[in-house]
Structure formats: structure tokens, C-alpha cells
Image 1 (cartoon, rainbow, N blue to C red):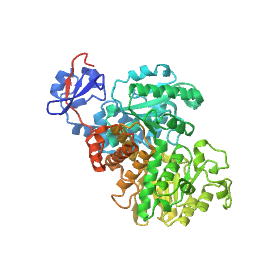
Image 2: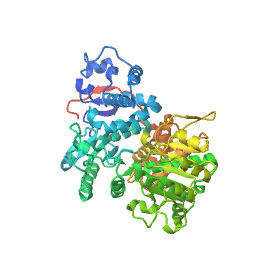
Image 3: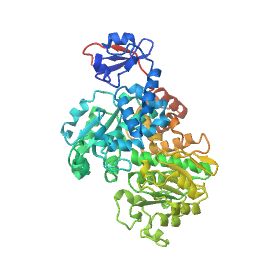
Image 4: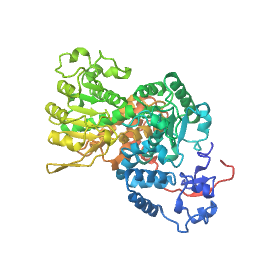
Length: 578
């Protein structure tokens, strides 16, 4: 077996304790973020590894290093500056970075991910300082296998890949989307338990339609318009073939693909390469989990609800899919389930006599069913649809700020005593409504969850906690469970199992739609166990050690394999061992 990295390998001593055998020394060792301990290198390590005299004499514990870097973090003057500071720390000392984020997860998740990562994506070329991840572009697709061989890690088990065509709610961002892949994998590590040396962020740079990027002298991506059609699919085919050759068995998360490619890419490769699309499946599972939790709060079932989904892109279609699957799980036929789910795109309600993209058609209402509606617009608009459908659940995936206005909320309140209103679009600037308005307009009756973090809202002497329907409650457990089970495919039923596991976890305490961000690691453990259980039932799990384990045993299995940020002892390896 080759070492897991050309720079080091993981060994065990006679007592079974893990240590690192390193093949680099001196300043080079200090400059590799996966290996750098900074001032925490011991006296023996400094002598053996050529670091004597290159570091301050005081040997620090990680706890004092954490105090120092947290102080520096708090001195940053804006969320973007805090993001840049944390990224620089990650590029200097990964163990310390993850220990810091884990200790302050509720405070730092909005900094390393939404909403701040949106700004970091937009300014990626301007603030770029250090290479991270794999850049596959039209410039190097002909030598993509060589590019993969240049990755110094031999045991990559999970990757996040984006073509940056539809980042959050801010659209085409060219090469800047690499920040999303980096941010998602940071969450996999700190919230999902995946080791940082098992992760690879990937940017698939096929061009951009943004003229301002193409003419920006600082822009770091290729300077041409996006590949389309067969040229795009040929690029993706060659990328996937190289992935399978270099890292067979790796789990891949497709991220932030535009609606015209997201479904095509997922369907084309999911059986060749164990993969899932977080915008479609992760968003759908997260929304379903929140609705299930809210239904339990009100003493109702999912089958009692009627759903309006504003937005028919990858996220909106994914949520529609999840609601249909959830309703079918409660005994409805597919036809009965679809009758309860109403989806709108930018032109209005999806109706089957309209022109529309192929992936929207399964969620189009029969024209005859809406022919008798009293509607001011044709096709019916959001307010028309809420009034005529009797909607009790309103889910926002439109990226259109403020479209859940007072009239919309009042219409929802006429349909239900406790309407569920979830403006889920990211970042914060794209949210369909702000929670304070929703509470005021509904007179405190609405059950609310948002996609981005919002502060708690005081209303009539009470403080309402705003639940965050963040995909980070689902995708880390879905990915980690998939890689632990060594699945051949990420099935749809595994995704739905993740949604139910999240809802079940949330209901350990009454009155919550989603757990707190601080519980994300524990949540991910339970989601991963449910995913593994479902993978075995689906016949796609290839890890023999989990055969026959029940849910409780799977939870223990996952916990034992979660990576925890700490420093291992180092020894110097034999020259040429790598």
C-alpha cells in the first residue's frame, strides 16, 4: 500500500496509538497546512524534523493557540475580513482552523458559509492568496489525469465539485465558485466528521457568461464563454473518467450547477460515480425535514398539508420532489401527492399546457384542474395560487427578495391557523421575506424557517427563535454515511432517510423546526447512521463491517470514525519512503 500522502503516512505504535510518519522537514513541513503545528511542535519534533531555531522557543498547547487565533478573529472589522482571516488560518494550520471553528461553530458557520461566502465568491480573484483544491479547466482537460496525479493525497474519499454556473442566489461566478467547494468541505470536516486529508474541493472551469469577469485583469479563470451542449458533456465525461481512475469509490457532491445542467449531470453520472446534487437533493431533504418537524409541532401530518413552492430551479424542483416523496411515504399515490404540490417559476404556476423545461413537467398541474380558479393572472401568480390551492405550506426557493409580502402572508393565514412559511433562498439578501415581517403580518401565527441565519425576533412579549433550514444539517451526514458504507450509488431513498433522521433528531426537544447550529456534528452522526441503514436496505452498501448493525450500533460506528481536530505525534520517515 502506498502512503496516504506523498508527504506523510499514518501509522500505529505497539499500543495502537496513531502517529504520523513524515517525509518532509524544515520550512517545507511548516508550510504544509495539513502537517503544520506552528508553535505546538515538541522539542523532540523540532530537533528530528529540522525545525530547531525556525520557531519561537515557547512550546504552546493547542488551547493557547486557540486563544490567540480567536482573539485575532474577533479583531477583524467585517464578516468578509473574518472569512479571509479564517481562510488564511486554514491555509496555514488545518488542525487549528478546524478546532477553532468547532469550538465556535454557531458564530463562525455564517462566516465560512452562507451568507458571507457569497461575498467571498464574488471577490475570489481579488482576495486569492494560496492554492487549494483541484482546478479542472478547458485549458487542462486534455491532461486531466496528470492534474489528478498532482494532488498529493492518495486517499481522497469525498469531493465537492462546482461549475459555478448558479452560485447561491447570485448566479454565474466563474472561477470564484471554488470558494463554495472549499466552504462546503470545511463543513464536512467540522460538522460531518470527515478528515480534512480525505477531502478535495474541485472547480470545473468551463468559462463564464460574465463579461465583467472576462474583462477583469485580476480574474483567475479561463477567459471565454461557457461550454454548452456536447462540448460541455464531453468535458464532464473526461472529468468523471479521471475521478474514477484516480479515486475509485470516492463520493462526489455536485454543487451550484445551473438548472439547465444540474439534473442532466446528476442523471448522467450518479450510477457511474456515487454522487448527489446538494442543491436538488440536499435542499429537498432539508425542507422536508423542517416541514415534518413543524407538522409534529401542530399535531398534524404531512398528508394534511397543501404546498406552494415559489421557485422552480434546481432547489425548487428538489423541494417539490422531496414533498412528493414524503407524501407517498404517508400512503398517498404519486398522482395524489402531486395534486397537493403547486410549483411556480418566474412566469407563474406550472400548468401542463405551458411551455417549460423538461425537469419542471412532473410538477405541472393539469390545466383542467385550475381552469375554474379565480385568478388575476394567467398563468396564476403566487397570490392566486395560494388563494385557490388552499396552501398551508409556503416554501421560497426563488432568490427573489421580498416576494412574500403582507398580502401573501395574510392569504396563508386564511388557509391555516398555523401556516408554515419558509423563505429558504440564500444569501440573506435574496430571502423572500424577513422573519420580523412574517411574524407581524401573521400576528405571531406563522411557523418560520429561513435559509440564511437571522436573529431571534421579539414579538408581543415573547422571543421567537428563527430556525435555519440550512443544508448543512443534511449533506455532511449524507456524504459521510455514504463513504462509510462505501456505497455504489447514492439512492433517492437514502436522501429521504436523511430527511426523516433530521426531523426525528429535531423532535427530541419540542417547539423546534431545526436543531441549533451548535448541534450540527451530533445531528450529522444520526443522519449518517440512517443513510447507512438505508444503503444496506437498498443493496448499495459495500462495507462488510456494517452488515447486520442496527441504528444504535451504526450511530456508535459513525462516532468512532469522526475526525476530531488535534495534533498527532510525528516521527521522521525514511528518505524516499514516499
